[in-house]
Length: 285
Image (tube, rainbow, N blue to C red; front, side, top):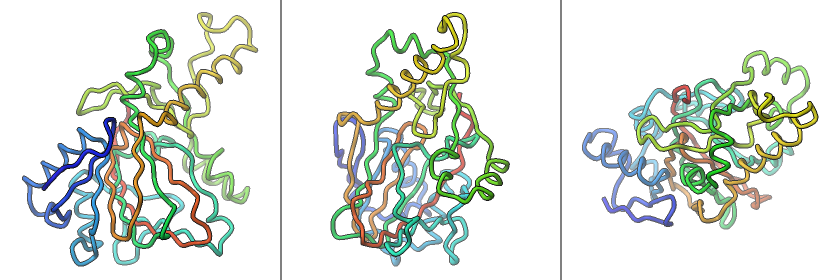
């Protein structure tokens, strides 16, 4: 296996390897996982169904941990747990795409990572971008690091993709998946890196409104809100990013604990069919 870094900050492409082999080869799997911790997102081409069946796709992800279900997206009938992210140009709701985010931070234990394979994609467009949020934290000015030390943020999907749901369903989903709160700076449990851990699911700081930060109640919304938006915007910095152009049967594997990503919505009216195995993570600290 050859590992080719794609940027100075994040991302590497793996050559001359099949993930199907890594399902049964401990040494190969360990080499791939070490590369994932180092580069934070890995890319492979030509992972066709004969080389990597849907069951092998799931089995590789299960070597990372327990598979995670999605509350709104169905699984493939041949492989329960392999989520079908199928975009259909004939459906108005499928024109909605995401913003910069880390998967599942609205859960108490957000995803550890994901293994995503492209089945069908447009000839051009539909790229995905990842950002290194450990580097984003490292590069923050010291006075900002001091200011956000110990802060926690509320995370919710109800103001993002749940907003497109009918009101009754949205209320039901709120009961099933209440908001979660996480540290603004999390520690990666394996690399021990400090990671800036706010994204488009973060709605507000839960412990900013105190005598140290707020003179009067009006400060709560303005100063805390501006600071949160500044932190969220760090994912937009090109020097922290890698951009991947999809081809059929390309695969991306990413460490959700240290990255954010953005699926670029520039490809209508084409189809885009992706299959994702998400891995259950741990409670951030």
